[in-house]
Length: 404
Image 1 (cartoon, one colour):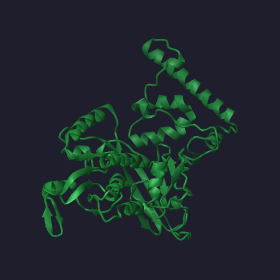
Image 2 (cartoon, one colour):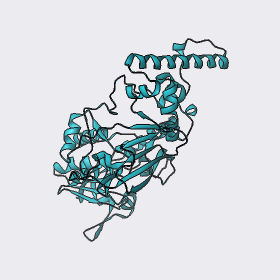
Image 3 (cartoon, helix red, strand yellow):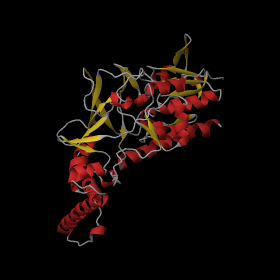
Image 4 (cartoon, helix red, strand yellow):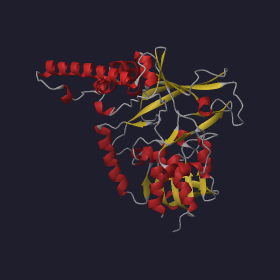
């Protein structure tokens, strides 16, 4: 029996949009369904007082992949925004990532050699302390270079020293994860970037920027093709059970499409039959302020333990405080961001890549591989954190394998 569409694409986010566009250009008909009442997934932006507000948190596009950069350029013009966040520790402001501005503020050093010497001095002192504590606990003697950090706190201090850890890492990380750094495994932080230059560009990427007019416009343009139909406010699981209304008639799920591209939670697809995968979640308090400038920067991280939120985003600075015609904007919009424990029903943001959840995902992946004519993709479908450029790269690769 001939199906109505070639592909049913579940999720109108970045992965689904990229795949749909490539399939449509091959002459294949795609139906995109989205549970939310809008497209663009977590990169959705909405215009408030002339400002493109990142509803689900700040998204700064950056990539070293020229193919990915050329692809997105087809669907939006990008501005030259460079991510240069600031850390606020109890009213002290520090430049991020850690660079010479940071070290000058921290210790008063003015040369790279002096900064490096100070960091090494603090690292050495800390490691000797860890070795001493290890001997007292175990009775064993080990050399400093043999010591293996036992938790995230020790790992961070051995990378950047105690002062940077205490002021710029500890509080922020504990708020992000909802537990003490001494209770977190060391592997969470494999490295902390230290720059002995005055470069405060957070991303070492060849290409970087924000789409002019917001990310929603970018996704709209990807979906703008005669072979793509997008339906929002439509739950895949309702469609799977009851079909979908099309041109006044109900089309059963089995007759809808030859193949499915599924970008929702992989455990939900299988009705959580093996258990629930866990995430960290984020919530936002967003408000419009009757002032032109609240904090003077798009992103300020609050790295002390007492401030309940992890950062404040002032959205207008992603587009330099001006509207699409280059006019100054009289108001501003800020979002306070809180990290939170996730429970079923909450918005899933970051996979918890510990042993338990990684093992559970492997079992779900086996079920997914056995599904006929279903492709699982994206951060929820693959239970993997992806930067935006990597989502596009993987979606393009999937499209090549599937369509060429």
